[in-house]
Length: 178
Length: 180
View (cartoon, chains in turn yellow, purple):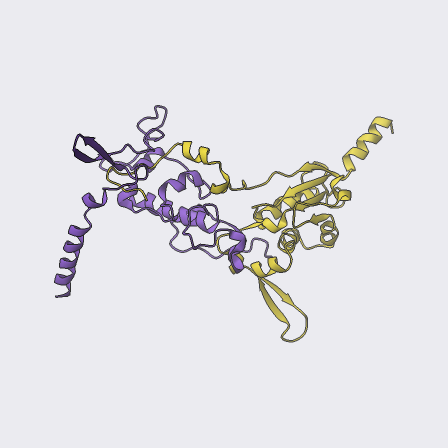
């Protein structure tokens, strides 16, 4: 094998580290994206028997957004194994206990339940805030695109821009502004 | 009898609080009608002048846009200005939605917005979506918990909404897509 081919082989099978910003992202939608990078499904060389999955670092998992009433309606089931040991935890209660668990469970459930799943999950790092340990951050070389745009709050937009934004509604003639 | 009393009460209320009386004001820039005082020698002339709307210069209307393809409707019904523009407004477009609310964040009634029924309903729902998501917290009543992170229980976390649910008769329960 020539030196060029050897380097090509290393480059093909090297693990890439991706970072994903979970701010205002739906965990169940982003789990389908994260899953592809974790398993290596985005690579043309993918095969279930070759170890080509990448590493994904999720940041800001505390600021995920659920749709509609999901914080209150979604329940997570746990059973201790003892009689009467069943418990249902609502999504907002689970997020209060551990802000990384919802995204972790979403990615875990998005993958097929086989023997490889637990090993693939080892390659997923989730951090509740923006801070990443330095030994993790030095490996990161790619960013996964967010699915939803982070919405901008009206009080964060400069006042001049709000004032000069094109208007759709105009007041009727005898309207009293309050 | 009750109807008679109600009718009498309404007519009395209308005479007391008629719009002509309420249109007069002393604070100039806040109202569309302003008061001007002029002193000519010993006589004082007070007159109410209709002020120009601060929005009229920035106003976007479908008639003014040349390249816009007009929407197809029945010949009898003229589309309202929002239907004619054909904008795809989301609940995150706070710069548009904030034009339809009062300073306390309440949706304005249809007689003031001048929208059709469907658009009024749609924008009203999107305003409440934006308020629930905490995107317009500077347009809230004074006693309101402004910061979303200071809200209680499930309300303190980020929430987004699907605009397709606005005109659904019954919102379906979330399906578990990962269930096998």
